[in-house]
Image (cartoon, rainbow over all chains, first blue to last red):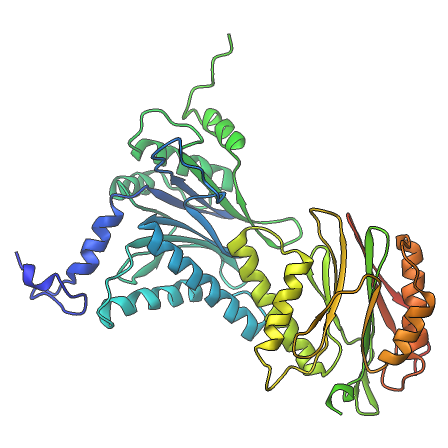
Length: 249
Length: 204
């Protein structure tokens, strides 16, 4: 239709749309899904790994989850190269705050700061937007556990449960149906894994194709970011009835 | 002189499979003692400590800036930093201010958790690394500290013996310096644990 308004990020179309931002969101809807669920004692992030080849030798421990600071982690959906830049930016922003104020950066401020960066690429510079959506999971002293979703436009929102990446609309409506307020972390894990398994393309599910991470408080009161090991993840999948236990004959 | 405005001394020593780092606790304004609980040794990892004697404001600022760089390192590399690498980070941070330096002369002590190797080093205020095998000293009573360490240190001291040696070296050195003293804190770092002790000293 209005193809003449595609090529530059910094102009509106007559209908008031930013095509480059929308095309960026298209790129993300082809990427592996990620789901976040807020519980009363933590935040859970679950993601689908798009494992393309068994020859792939992963050097990093996780593909879709990253720690930004001790009290904040993100799940990523979209172009990984863009994500790496933004993750590094987020890490620097969190450290700069800590250097100035000698306390951890509040989660919403971190999200806002990163989204301000993303917004800059939709208004000036003539550069394309980042093709990444994030799910931020974190804890701070003022607002407790929080979950935020952000997209390439730089918009963000606080959510009780959210989904990004492939089939995110289906996942989001499933979460809306099944989410109950005041759930525990274990119930949140169950919900996240259940919804993720239903919206994933692959027929067989195993811990090779999934990643699970949680933000919670340790008994001493400091925030912990833990990635679930492959064995534990397999056990959880069996426990919640998502996969059948392996037959022992 | 700027380096002796606040006063203070830090010593580190190598032992058998362990290192110790110790500092006095005085914070003064020229001759006037203002605090007896001023922290000069900072933890940068479970087995890595840095002591920052010199101008107190720079002690605090350099410690904070080092933590910044250390956090970024651990997030990117997904592992703990080794003492040798950390020494390079410190040297780099100081040299960046070659012509308007931080007035601290750091002392680094740690154990490489992979190899179990003890490591100590110190730098001057613009980042020149010095990595001896025995002990390092820095602060307002370096001459006294060098003398004490040279006399008391011997190789392969066990952790408890190392604690005694470094404590005696530190306390007797700063007792001969007006600008250091008012209590001492000693960290003994072994492969699996770190013991912190405060030493009762003459409070003058």
